[in-house]
Length: 115
Length: 114
Image (cartoon, rainbow over all chains, first blue to last red; front, side, top):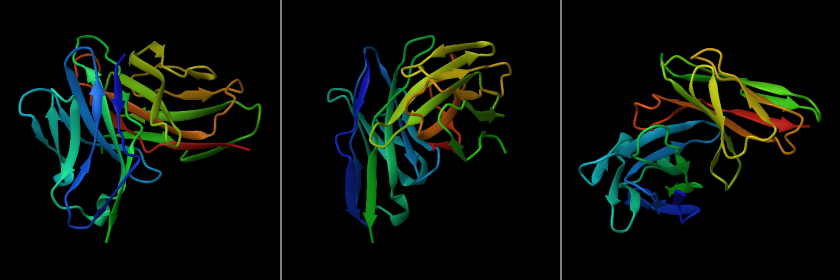
């Protein structure tokens, strides 16, 4: 069975500092990986995805993520955090196989950017 | 604007009542999903539908029912059999089998049982 782990319930970072939100995954085949952001009482917004190709993926709002196959990780990064980045972040994975493939979400990491 | 709408935003239910949550999309997506979100548990899949007139149970389908009579619409009914229905409910859609799995989410409905 596939799974996603977000080992940190909360990450605190000072405004202007780089941020990293960690994600590791387990899937039987090749992974498709996603990051979403959720603001309070709102739906999830798509940030970026890894399908194939370059291990460094760039997404919305200056976020990027690095796919590491050997470590089965897909950490979310941003060079300089903004207070407005404070939100709940979800990592998700699905198998790249054909047909319907379930998407599994992590439990989320709350990012707090301190002014 | 293209997107997914959910209504109502807030819903209150008395014990023993059935309630229906609405989800509509104009993205021309084939697949639609219902998730339940509880604090610290991430998103759990209730039901999904890959095509009109077809739907499948997810991980926590007990006490819920759905229909998919139109491509644009995927309403969720929370029945009295659902013992702990208070939660935030999210509807999503994606291209379906031909897509890469990226899902688009509605704004959510917060259901509270009184």
